[in-house]
Image (cartoon, rainbow, N blue to C red; front, side, top):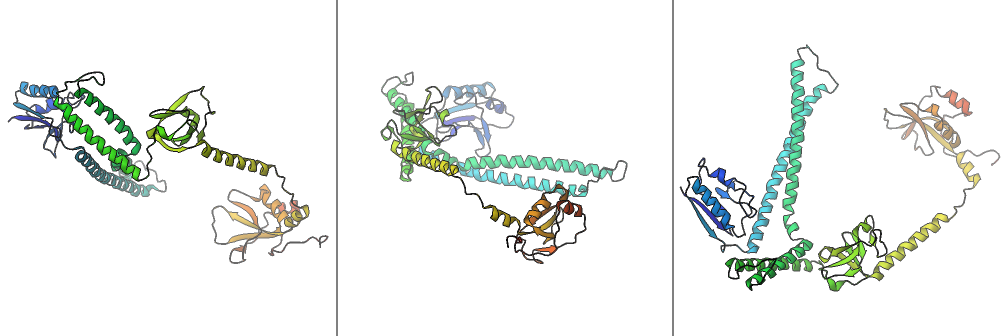
Length: 455
C-alpha cells in the first residue's frame, strides 16, 4: 500500500496509508519535523491518520517532508508527497473553528473534573467508613483473631485516602484546564493584547510588501515572484481586518484606544493600577518614573524618585486611564484637608467624666454569674447580687476561676426564670468574699444603691 504524505493550509500535514508494524511509526515519531524541526507526527483516531501538530494554516517546509518521504522509501515503503500551499481557509473560518474547539475542550475537561471529584469523594467516604471502627482509638491486638482484619482495614484506609488525594489533584488539574479553555475567546479578544498583535501583523505586512517590491526586509531579501508572498499577503490582510473589527467592537462598548495625542507632559496615566505622572510623551508609550517607585502607592509623581533617576515606559496599549494635573491636585488637597482634620481631632482634650457620676455608676447593682466550659445551658446561672464595684473585685480575683469555670458579671441579665436562674451557693468561695469584705445578696434589683450621705 502506498503511503500518501499531503499538505494543505486547510488540513495541515497528514500521512495516510500506513499499517500497524510496517515500520512507519518509528520514522514518524522522530522529533525532527515541523517548522521547528523538533516535532513528531501523532496518530489521530478522529482523522484515522497521522498528523503534524501546528501545521494547519501554515506553509509546508518542503525539504523536511521530502526527507520524510525518502526515509520511508529507504525502509522499503512506497511513499508519495503532495504539497498545495494555496488551498487554505479564511482567517475568520479558522478563528471560529478554534473557538468551537476551545468550547468543546471546556465541556470535556469539565466532565473530567466532575468525575475525578466524585471519585475523590467516594474514596474519602470509603476510608471514613472503615475508620469509624477505630474512632475510639482501639489498637491492633497482636495475636488476636481480629489482627488480620485490622491490618487489612488499615491498608484499605491508606489506599483509599491516597486515592482520594490523587483524584482530588486530578480534579483540580482538569478544573484549571477547563477554566483556561473557557476563557480562550476572552483571552484572544482582549483589547490590549489585540492592539499589540495588530502592531506585529502590520509590521509583517510591511515586510511582505517590501519583498514583493524587491526590497530587503527583516535583514534579508526574497524572490518577488514567490507565490508564497501573495498568499501570505492575503492572510495578513484578512487577519488585520478581523482584529481591527475586534477593536472597533471594543470601542463601541466603551474601550479607549490611547495614543500620543491624548497625553502631554505633567498628565497622569493609569498604568497597571497606579497613577504615574508623565515625564515624556513618545510615539508608542509615555515615560514615567521607574515602576519600582509605585510599590504600595496609588499615585507616583515626578518628584517621587527613589531610584536615582531611573525611568520606565508605559505602552499606550497597557494604559487604562488618564487624568490632568489639575484633576490629580483636587484629590490631593482633599486628602490633605482630611489628614489635617484628623490631626486636629486627635489634639482635642476630651472633657473628663465627673467623679460623682463615676462613683454612682460603680454603686449600681450587678449580677454575678458562673460560667462553665463544658456545660452549655439555656439559662444563665446566677450566684450573687452585689454592687458593680464589688462584682469587679470578685470576678477579677484569680481564686474565683478554674480550669472549667469562671465568674462574670452583668448589669442587664434579662428576666429571672426566662434568661437566668439562681443556683445554690456551696460556700467554696466564702474565704474570697471574706477577704474582700463583701456580703452578697440572693435577690436581684436593677435599681442603683444610693449612698446614705448622697441621699
